[in-house]
Amino acid sequence: MDVLILGGTSFLGRHAAERFLKRGHTVSLFSRGETPNPFSGEVEHLLGDRDGGLSALENRKWDVVLDTSGYLPRVVGDSVELLSSAVEHYLFVSSVSAYGDLSKPLDEQAEVARLEEATEEIDGDTYGALKAECEEVVLGAMAGRATVVRPGLIVGPFDPTDRFTYWPSRVASGGTILAPDKAEHPVQLIDARDLANWIVDLLERRVSGTFN
Image (cartoon, rainbow, N blue to C red; front, side, top):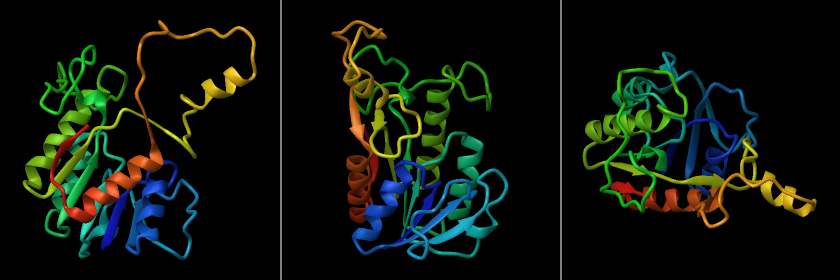
């Protein structure tokens, strides 16, 4: 396949690109170039900005696109509009935060979060609802040719946040540890390498739909 990845190579995009290459696919990366490219000579690097700088994507064709960097419906809409006739299938990486109520077990039919008023300010209160709106943009424009993936806490090599790796490192250092919540509260993790493998599987098979 000819694959386009919208996003840099800091974390999930890096693992996905690596797995596409290992399976013999051709990869183009579209990003602002702020993250060092570990695949120099192996992938095509297209420089641009999703917010108003998509010219590098014009008059091109790919089999599939992997969108790891969509957070605002307007910006995602620009990408989808340009690529809807240029790709066969579009996979959007959303988030479990897209759901409106995270206090109970979720399936893909659960209600998604909604913004109380229109905004492009991304914070803890708006992130999930904005992701949900991005999903709707993709699914609406690419009907029957789109996949939405809603991962939970993504962890693994090259994670820039340290939000998970802090804990095993801190526990290993010993001593009294200040815990964030009740010990019986579950946290579900997914390794970025497993997520990348699954994403490649979905795109190779052109599986449509929304998946936790």
